[in-house]
Image (cartoon, rainbow, N blue to C red; front, top):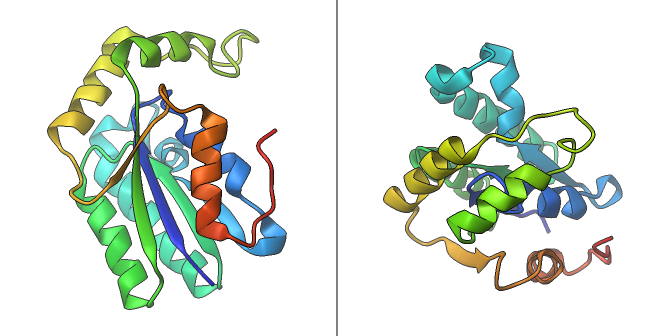
Amino acid sequence: MQKLIILRGAPSSGKSTIAKKLRNFEKKIVWLKVDVFKVFFAEDASKALHFVNESAINVLEYLLEQGFSVVMEGIFQEPKFITLATKVAIQKNIPFKVYELKCSLKTLQIRDKNRPGVKEGCRRPLGNKTITYLDSIIKKKPWVGSIKLDTEKLSLVECFNILRQEFRYLKAKFA
């Protein structure tokens, strides 16, 4: 059965880590990372977020038409794009759930400094100012109806297992 799972959260909240582990091509479950579309528009895509999100919605519609279940993840500074994604699922008669991953600002800032690629020199941390700003946006603009997952109180493994239950036939393990 097809499903749409939306993961919303601040950078370093665990969205990508969990979504990446849920994808399974053989079971037709794909990971749709909204941030991937930023590079299409600009080095700093903050002025192009509307186009970034609309591009992701169009790809979501295509993936659902192809019979995939989708784990879509992003910050979603404008919650209206979550609503648009859920409307696509409703139009296609596909069940959906929206999860908001959260943890303390201090933990987000610590995780930002230790994310994959930072130690290897492949990427730089976003920095405390950016993390603080994005975390505050999510708190100021909630998406009503989202299911809260605290990735500080629950381990990423526990969060993964909760989400994996959405795909009961998925036997994957968090490695």
